[in-house]
Amino acid sequence: MRSTLWPVAVALACAAGSAAAQKTPAQAIDEYRAMLADGNPADLFEAKGEGLWKQKRGPKNASLERCDLGKGPGVVKGAFVELPRWFADTGKVQDLESRLVSCMETLQGFDGKAIAKTEFGKGEMANVTALATYVAAESKGLAFNLPQAHPMERAFYESGKRLFFMRGGTHDFACASCHGEDGKRIRLQDLPNLTKNPGDGVGFAAWPAYRVSNGQMWGMQLRLNDCLRQQRFPYPEFGSDALTAISTYLGVNSKGAKSAAPTIKR
Amino acid sequence: MKKISITLLGLAIAAAVVGCGTLGAGADVDKLTQDMVRGAFRSEGIAKVERVTATDETLKLCSAADAAGKPLEPAVAKRIEADNLKTVKWPSDGKFLGDWKQGEQIAQSGRGQTWTDAAGQPNGGNCYNCHQISKEEISFGTIGPSLYHYGKLRGVADPNGAAARPVVEYTWGKIWNAKAYNACSNMPRSGHMGNLTEQQIRHIMALLLDPASPVNK
Image (tube, rainbow over all chains, first blue to last red; front, side, top):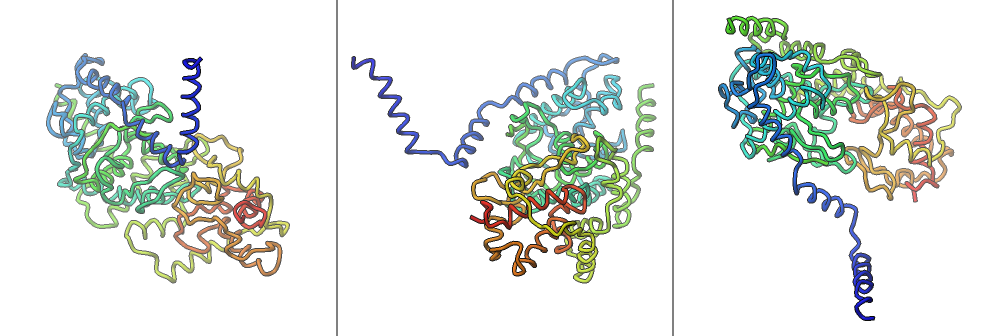
């Protein structure tokens, strides 16, 4: 008789315990965020990206191991925290994702324009995201240090700043509407102030990231795309100068902040 | 052979890209920025490219002021506010308040006006994204001030009475066109930009000003 009452007694004790120590919604959200941090599906995308970097693919049946991400052909470590930057061979300031597409085109023979028009999460665009996750992971813990030596790099910073403050759309939103002040949040989502260095692993230093809420891996191109969508802006083309300029502004502002990418988000 | 084709590709891309040349002057950066905007955005769904290429004077001036870190000259700000006040359409039947229960739903909803939204659907007010409103809703933003006890704090006992009229008119005007009272406000111009209908604004007015609304309890 006594042994069969054990589970009942335990159940009653647990019920009494949880009634006495009722979690506040804020506490519950903090616990959820702590749970998220344990095991990041981004690791799978990183592994996929590393495989794609080394695999011979495309019409030219070549790997990406000679791709120059700014620190010389094939140098991956440290490249992420110096992007966007100016590239002599294309004559453009490029961010990580557009630079990966350039390399896929020149080294492997893929059609860069077709990749740029491919939906996020599909086909070669999904491969670009995985590659970006891998390249970013190889700079984890390193401090952002975007070059500003070339006049175009400086011009893109200045244009990026103007774009950051550019109000538009049906709601008059600019990036700055949400990310222009300290200590603000939208609903319960804290918003980093991106007009200055927001600290290690925050803002520009947190993407690419795996988003739990939709089970998707997002690079910076998609992060900016969705910000602009919610700003009620028209559609920004993948790899466009405007997006590169905004990334340049964010990246230069993050100088000294340690990259935490790839991270995990709600 | 490979070298030549890469150079040609590079030249072709460089030619297609906005020229940089020797930039330094502010006017050049403005032009570069404008060229970037024209080159980057395309119309998609209901989000037309004019939303960034044809912004009005209010947005152009406020964007420039923000980027420069210098507020508008007071005289310019006053003129912008006056221009925006002229756009306010007062309720067609003289009724300022609707149903606070529907107002709460509109305040909770962030739907509408993005390129993934269908045309002809009712939009949400986005209000809780930036404001605290009722006591019960803990998921509120802090970009705008708290609106909890909005009517109560302003002593609105009878929203239809003469005493409350200035507050009622200000509140309607602020929701219709926030820039009428603060030239470079962060708040959207819900009536002026066609985000909310007259009836939807009446419901939000009730949420804020009806003594029976949970906001004022």
